[in-house]
Length: 145
Ligand code: RB5
Image 1 (cartoon, rainbow, N blue to C red):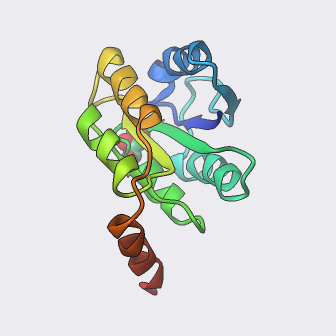
Image 2: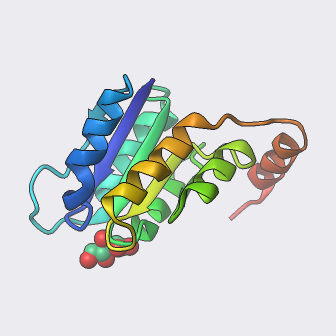
């Protein structure tokens, strides 16, 4: 599985452990940055990773900022992206199964490393259930800005 990864400076602290874990799971990771702990703007990073998912170059995206919120908002501006910040594994599991989430966001100032890894695993281990949930996602696509 190909994963697009991006974080801002607040997410930099979790970056390496998440990428290492993804590689241990056998994932191919495309790292869109940031590459140093210098202050950066999360919309730039969130968009880069989301575009790779939207274009089909990556299967799923994983983003990290301070709360997971700003970077998920950026990703959601990209066509075909369903991104959300998850602070525990249950939400990440259900977000795949019911919402077909294709970009997971994590808040490095919200959860510790162990919980972050459990959230990643819940996200990657779950599968979209389709059926009535697919109908609801189609309804979401019909909502115009
Ligand atoms: C950076 O200070 C912080 O605002 C950012 O990482 C994120 O939490 C925004 O939603």
